[in-house]
Length: 158
Image (cartoon, rainbow, N blue to C red; front, side, top):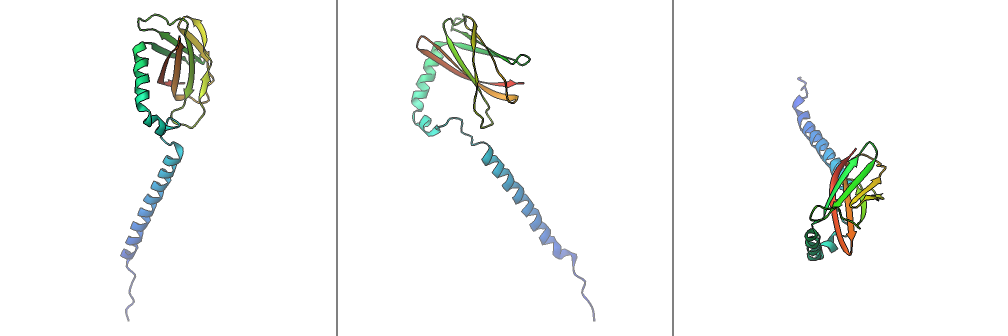
């Protein structure tokens, strides 16, 4: 009587199944992290903004017609944010009020408000304690005489 030796080849389909199971498990984990970490929405009500997009375009054209310019500088060693505002001719914008806040573009974290003090006409300075360093969106709003100018700038803050 002959005894049959089990063939090693019968384990091969199980190895393929185990390999595919590992790939599916890793993909499922990555998908859950991607969906749970950032929704991809920047505005709280994107549908309403989309429905009123023509109004947004008109506001942006009015803003661009002002010709105002915002220059922001971050001084990491002092934790100081400097904002310079000028008009279309490049002159400092006298009598302006400036509001600023820092927003993390990749985290659901409340914005960090920046209190800006007037140093001279068109130049404002504020001190900020950053919770983390990295990429931040600086949202600046300038108001003067009923005109409003808003700009967002991405900055790497150390």
